[in-house]
Amino acid sequence: MLSNPIPPNNLSPHIPPLPPLLLSSLYNDLGTSIPSPLPTYRSTFLKAAHLTSPSEPAIIKNLGFLLEQTGRIKEAEEMYNSHLSKYELDAGINFLEKTLCPPHQNSSIQAKDIYLKIVSGLLILLSQPPPRNLQLDPTREIGQMPLGFPYLGIPLRPLLTLFSRAYIKHFPILTQGSIVPYDKLNSDGTIELGIIAEYSGNTSPGKLLQSTIIGLHKTGKFDVTIFLPQIFKTDFVEAIVEEGIKIVHLDIHNLESSKLIIKNQHKDILLYMAIGMSPLTYYLSFTKLSRIQVQFGHGHPITSGNPTIDYFVTSEFFREEGGGRYSKKIHPMLDDAILGIVRGDDEGRVLMLEGSRVHVSRWRESGWSEDEISRILFVGRMPHTDFLNLISHCSCALGTFPWGEGVTTFEAFAVNIPTVILPGKVTVENLSLGQVRVLGVESELKANDIPDYVSKVIRLGKDKEFRRSVKAKIQDNIHKLWEVDEIVEEWMTFFTSI
Image (spheres, rainbow, N blue to C red):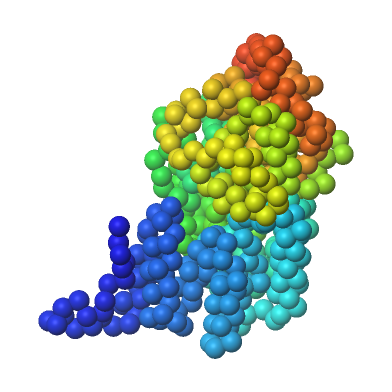
């Protein structure tokens, strides 16, 4: 354990002190390279970097992002405002200060307040004049994107439309370089298909689309190219390489370079596996880089908010009539359901990942007893196979809302564990609803409201015969979730029709 992680600037009487810029750069590099499970040390080094070079925007953005993601919004806001009041306006810091969003909220009311504050900040940005430098690259000026706002539990499209307008005004480079529309390129009917895979496909959309992409490639009707913003060794990449599918690497730190790389591949259709999980792919989506641009609507199913995306792919299986009134974190909206489960089953236990422990203080403030809190069991990170083995011993899995779930449910069903869902409270495309419909267990696992959700969970826990019958249905129909041929045919029909 490091007692004082900050090295002094006079390490030896024989070594002169490091210049402030070099020292701050050292601290900044240490603060951004330490693994995320060690936020205290990351914060210590980044604060030291900021103290050494208080006017350096890159350091402020790194520290601000860390403060935001650890819930210290007030600190981040004060630091941003201090910089904006003392130094020349920095477009990135100006934007970040007005769109701060913590990853967790203490109540639904707080979530709404945060949402309204972000809307207010975006409206201020829209009222401000554009920067003098119209070539500012947001991949460098903004840095890492906050991922908190999709979890606020409030409709996303109006918010993301405002985000889009504000980004375009302050970073006009986003829309520069769009291609001129053209007809399909290949006379032989082959479709040039480009696919942007964030994090080398090591995402929910990557897991969902891997077999489909390979299936499209094998039809011989598509010339498939995978664009990778990051270079990781993943199962997705290994499978793509094994099939001989072309891979092209993008420049994650240079938007214009990445645009040019994609345009030079001359694709008919560009499929974004997700938008909003990483900065580069979000910013790329503002430019028309192919004849048709498509967003996959599952896994990280939020809209881009800008008009350059022509299609958002969904399914009739994932729609719930009357749903979508609200937008995998534990949102306060889910608290009543969890509390109802532990109160309704004296022997019941709810397993959560260790990161969810941050919600304990909220539960105490909401009146949960210590006995009720003690029946929430937290488990640390573990190898994926160990995780699947752990959940295979559970009576059921809990579908989360308002965000929803997808691959998590696939994995639960794969080990024959029922998942109770409440699609009417989910804001995004409900992948789990499609799964329970395909498996023939919609009446058993789809709840109509929170009391019904709690009742179904408790019944699965207490009624062994009921649980056995549900699991038998899942076992009999699970093969339907893995059948790829029909899915490939549907994608092929869609792509050839647009």
